[in-house]
Amino acid sequence: MLQLSQQQQTELQQKLSNEGFARIENILDDTNAQQLHECLCNLDYQLALFHNGTAKSVKDSDILALTPQEQQALLEDIHSYASRGVGFMYGRHSIASSSPETLQRLYSDLNSNAIQSCFSAISSQNIIRTSAQATRFIGGQYLTRHNDIVEAEGRVYAYVLSLSKSWHPDWGGLLQFFEPDGTPTKSYAPKFNSLVVFDVSKIHSVTYVAPFAKAPRLSVTGWFRTIDI
Ligand SMILES: O=C(O)CCC(=O)C(=O)O
Ligand SMILES: [Fe+2]
Image (cartoon, rainbow, N blue to C red):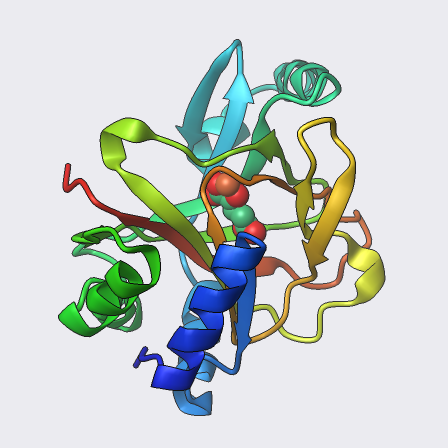
């Protein structure tokens, strides 16, 4: 399903070493991209959020079990962190053996020798593990500025395989990069069947998705890693 040509590998390596981020368009063949899109549209997601000072994953049923007042208080707490540039709220599905077959096939390809050798060559590091999760951002959701460095996992590059169709430029949901002082630099709007790869040290965010966005922002994201834990 997923493979990079020698030319794509060379371009990626050049852009990553010059700028720290790069995008390849039409990364999958059309049938696989369509299948993945369908799969992400119909997937079960948990809500990833930052509440009471900690990251949590909660089920829809946990939220529905709260009274309207409790739901309001929860949202206010999440937003009070966000207002200070902390936290996130989005749908997350960790890929596991119970995930749909299409997602498992992608997961195998991301962990294949071909892909790991390719990213080992690009990074001059020994990539032995690729983590992957499906994500869904709907109106009102976001991921504030952060970097993706987790030394215990040996993360080298992050990737975002975008599977949203016909994303409107006014819907937000940009993968936005920043200078350390918060000045925005490069941004990528969701683009169907494109793969953004970036250095985990780059500060980035997913900007707020407009409440009027007519479709979810769907992706498979993760990290190429040197440590298998
Ligand atoms: O979805 C994206 O564009 C980026 C996601 C991200 O930054 C993360 O999961 O750490
Ligand atoms: Fe990130």
